[in-house]
Image (cartoon, rainbow, N blue to C red):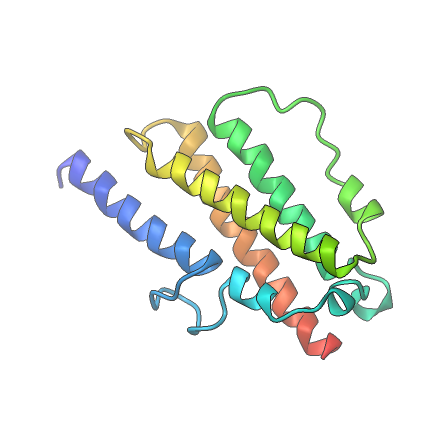
Length: 157
């Protein structure tokens, strides 16, 4: 198979999975209403503020963490220094949120997702390990947290 055709096919499949994870059903692996942004739309600030099981992170912290992860990987893809990254800060500091704070967290996630998606769509090639690894990490990591959030909702609702 021609390398260019292989990269185009990879990109097509990757973006279908990425879009499905965040926003639009394509039949890759989720049911129609299960994307991250759709799932978050149905969660109130009160629900987002409850530590799951009384000892785990809140859904607000999960969303803040995914957004932070996207920002760190964006810098990695752009080959910009990430500086010192404190992966634990969000888990230690994000808890109870107001409706305004919850709205800002969801909006921030959407904004960063769209920015990173645009960055990835603008790649000339998937040959460079930094964008390829970053893109795959974004997809896998976000799908994991989508699962965490959806499982948490079983307990919270």
